[in-house]
Image (cartoon, rainbow, N blue to C red; front, side, top):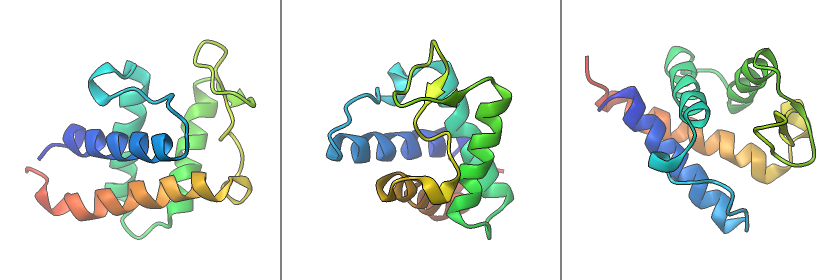
Length: 117
């Protein structure tokens, strides 16, 4: 298994969680924008490099990367305007958003032993 494949699994799990929360905004991995795939891959790499870090650390790494790319807080996710409602400290995220970070970390932990090379 490759990092990109783990990222795909994480993305799809996140997409299904979003659907369950009545947020159909996430597109399937193969239809996702390149920046979304790159973000998932970076998240997997962070989890692999920091296996003992709490789920909040994954969010903080994501937040730092997004800020570096020019994203800011906005009530609606808009890739053109680079606004995102999760551009807040982890403690201020709604519980369902925090659950995404826990789910992402759990998937990476479960699949890490299957990584090639």
